Image (cartoon, rainbow, N blue to C red; front, side):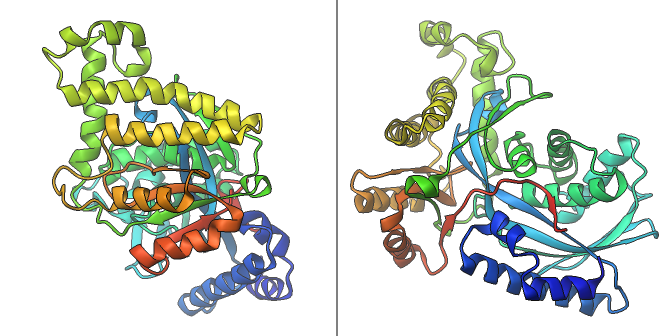
Length: 427
């Protein structure tokens, strides 16, 4: 669209309906979005003052609601796209180059005739961009270049999947322009996962990318990871009287790759001892019957983590059923059970490398004390550091956020709404 029409449209409220869909129904959310998008367009214009034809894209973060560390064992998860997102102001070019300037970071420039893996780009956004472009090229897509200015509210290390949101955003831009939007959300998720695994150098499941790409509140069954079964969950937490709150404990995620890898590695070790590739293929009754034999080759922690998987996989499906039926009491009971299992069996609430740093247990303890039996609380995402999740009655939300921020600092508690769409172009 013409950049001047975009600016006028944002200013006079033309896009407010879309903003409410993305960021929540309040007038405050729409006004805040206006200011944010105008700022992004202004910053883009400083970089490309001659450009008049632009496109605006968005991709959300995600919150895991059920199924802690089940996806990499081909299990079930319950998750939702959220109102925190990354937005991009984009102009397309014919130079065969992708240029991305993210607010607060140095610009990345990727030539589309140089798409091989680069070890020096492992762990960088440039690696993700190159990997996404490479995967589209492998699919036979005639991709081209673009120039983008991006700004993100999905902070790195917030537990809301900033890398998956970034991957989905870049893939959505390419899909909309060069594939006529025909690449499915599932395939966009797989493209992001490929880039993260092969080019970024992080082995991950598919949950984060799938939720960011699909949008909404979804139940996902990864029994067949090539064709995961995604089912929409029809439930509105706000209408039911609850808010989804994520508290960032500000604990560093640095040097935790080994901790994350150990979870899937130990689960797969138990699966192998049972003659399977992943635990989803194993029989739970056989697992419990063979624990004495399993202990000869597997650690006790690996066995406990496997036990977590079996219970959590069933629990994620039960959570989806409970919430679909509007049974919030049973749902919160299951969420609390999930938190206890992650704490006691999965053991991902603090790092073994720094056992004195226990911000997540502290946040859980203080949340339970504040909620006093209402709602539910659990570790959020991969764990070991970072964030917790709480379901808080709406009448307590402001007080709960203040209590968390009293302990962990201003801006540490996010009150989220569920976003109904994944990768999105403002029109």
